[in-house]
Image 1 (cartoon, rainbow, N blue to C red):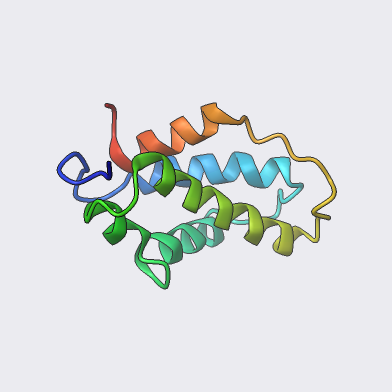
Image 2 (image 1 turned 135 degrees about the vertical axis):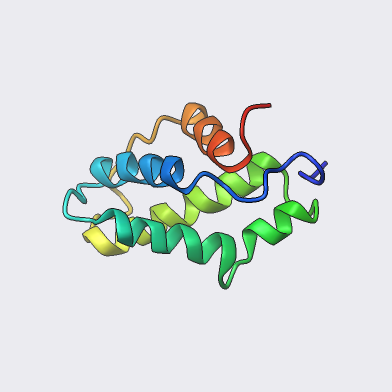
Length: 108
């Protein structure tokens, strides 16, 4: 149930950074740069986690890949902004996951 065969050659990094920007604002990270957000996303998809290759191999579904990116962004933002894990942060729930899926894999 992975993404084999239905993924573009590369994700839409501009759209992904846009999603990450909204997360950063929710976390109180107005001073976080788009370059920093791009680096985190790039590291998850193409670096140590190799999430993009796993998705292309069918090892991760669209939703799992989106959640991988979002979870790493959230962890990084909590560390970067010094925000407490106890503080609630409204990220938009399923709509954000769907938006990240589209940025990763395009429209269904």
